Image 1: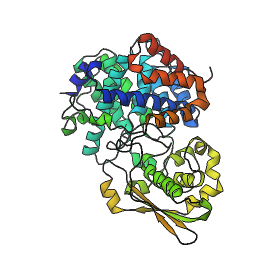
Image 2: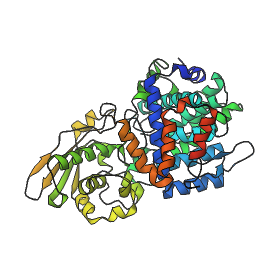
Image 3: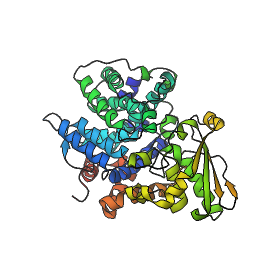
Image 4: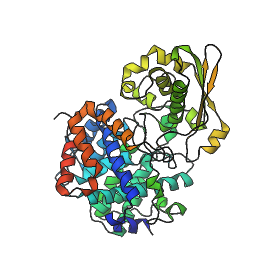
Amino acid sequence: MLMQDFAADLTYQALPDDVLLVLRRSLLDTLGVAAIGSQSEMAQIGTKTAQALFGPTAASSARCLFDGNLASAAGAAMAGAMTIDSVDAHDGTSPCKGHAGSAIFPSLFALADGRGLTGQDLATYLALAYEISYRAGLTQHDTCTDYHTSGAWTAVGVAAMTARILGCDAAQIHEAAGIGEYHGPRSQMMRCIDHPTMVRDGVGWGAPTGVTAGVLAQTGFTGAPALTCQGPQWWGLGDSWKLVTDTHYKPYPCCRWSHPSIDAAAELMVSHGLSHHDIASVEIKTFHNATRLAGHTPVSADEFAYSIAFPVACMIVRGQVGVPELDISALSDPAILRISTATSLIDDPHLTQVSDGKRWAQVSILMRDGTRHEAAPRTPRGDTDLPLSNKEISDKYHLFADPIIGAETAGRIETLCAGFDYLDAGGVQGLLDIILRKPGA
């Protein structure tokens, strides 16, 4: 099936139960990340800029996620994407080496506000955007020498979704995907790994690019073909949903590449009853790109997000990598810094070879008395073979959301997310009215 036919014809009734389960979990997980992200400097700068430069017009007006002020649909998508991307805890896909929800959800929220969509509509649009984004991402990785950010390929999925929401036919959706791909941010992910800043995963431009592409296609602008919507990764489209169901969830608010090391360190500390005071050094063997995260002495939230040594040290010293570790004060904790600076990252050829669609690491802890504790090589929790439970997803959501929007409001959102696809148009608008306002307003 051609991408444009899939996007134009997909119905809610065609969605398998396991896909709907992913969409419900991702909605809740993403909103928790967005809630805490709304307090970040990156989110506040991005939202103010979106409102200033992409403000509301008579033709396009939308509220910004967890802010409430108006921008255009593209501006609100930009603000929401930067809000979610500001805390590196949103859903992702290891085979695609990136994240779809951080661009898709804020774009959908911006387009859905006041449009009278039902929960079944939302589920249909989310499913097609995830599937198209993931397949475009895999194709891009197969055909490009650079490793591009998620913004590059989510622009294609958001474009197709936007065009479908606007009532475009298959031919217009074809054009929208081409426009989104052509104008999408072909940003190099490893530049942000080597030099972490607020540019992050590129979705801050991928989301508004996709929304704009859909509107352009609706009005007759042409842009086909999208080269990332062709080739072997598109075989079985409409029949297989393996990509969507391979979505993973993060227990920690930092780059996925650090997670197997964090998990291994946690296991060693608990199983051997270790105290960080007695640790002399730490060795982490992992795949090549992960060693470039480094991050022994981060000085910003961005450097923390793209590090391994420091979050591993947080786990060793504090037994957690959570909300308190996102506070800038944690970056100067002397106990964490001692462990972090005593951590060596080792580029392991075998782990590099096997980290194709998976993320592998092996951690050893060396004690002051010379004892060495070594964990077996492992992949991170949250992948489909080591899934987070519904309770773990819920606990993470409340950890992030409750301090920002209050436990009662957070609970209402969780109830709505659990069956969002059963909501009528009034129920969907009720959910949007909660999340498209400033916390506490």
